[in-house]
Amino acid sequence: MRHLIPALFAAAALAASPTASAREKLAPEDQLAKLLEGRIAGEPQDCLPLTSLRSSQIIDKTAIIYRVGSTLWVNRPDGGASSLDDDDILVLKTSGSQLCSIDSIQLHDRSSHMYSGFVSLGKFVPYRRVKGE
Image 1 (cartoon, one colour):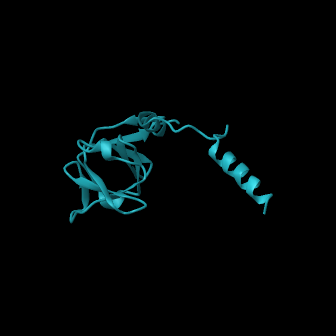
Image 2 (cartoon, one colour):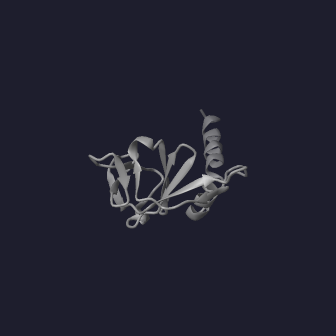
Image 3 (cartoon, one colour):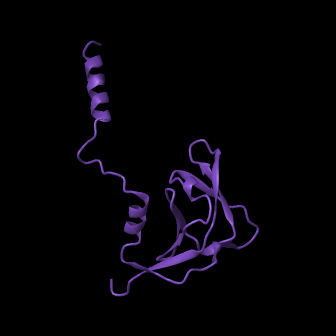
């Protein structure tokens, strides 16, 4: 048992110390820029059909990205963007078949499932890959 305690302290110290392989987290705008690298913006749209949405991704305090095929649709909320957290779950309550710029989305904490805020959506800007790349 005496040998186990120093080993536990050593393991805890290693886990707490930063490693050379640990990557620094990019600032939100830099994350978005990296995600959109090699893509060009198209004409903003008011709505997206819900049936075409394949996935979503939150960029902290910045934007929600919706994937439709190879196109990334960026929505920078008109209100509540400061509530966006990449560990939140997006909850949309609608009876319609589209997600529109007039909609609001509730945010719920992924761990506790507690309400953590909401955003009022803005226009959806499509980003498509540059042809030839």
